[in-house]
Image (cartoon, rainbow, N blue to C red; front, top):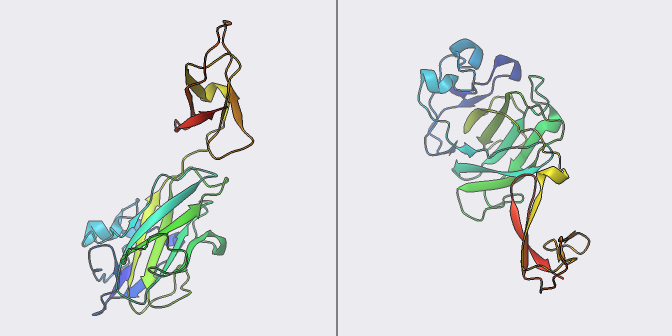
Length: 231
């Protein structure tokens, strides 16, 4: 019996032999499916065919908000020694996992590319392409002692988990999307962006009073506020 992926059939079927191995993703051991529990057959259009028909054992990967052109960090909880994590996202939404869509190539717990030093957790950075589809698409993650697995070749151990996701549209920066808040700033004072030597925000007022520049903050198009240092 095999643990199987449950994304739509067009993305390909991934099988992992369910045996006595302690190698799996998340907190639950994988269950064995006797049929292909893909979204087409079971009706789990969000990659939940396995969950609808068997146990909800797909809880191993946390995918944050993904935005076109930005970097994000994905976290995978893994069990068992000697495993290799593979991962793909169908960025262009064409219904298959292309070679250049692989986001996790042979990642090992506490190995190269793992941003988390905790045993049992793999964190890795992902660069979202600017062309990524903003319609629903799918991700696939495979954990096995077999290295260099592609998206569909059968594995002799481990687990496969498929996830539906939607990438957010990139925010175009504009003057109307940003705001600066100042306190006690003199007319013409400038504030420097943190850790930068090239970008400054100039403060202009409608009066001629003079004061010492005390503090300022800059809020960007995505509502992230950072304190600026006065100059």
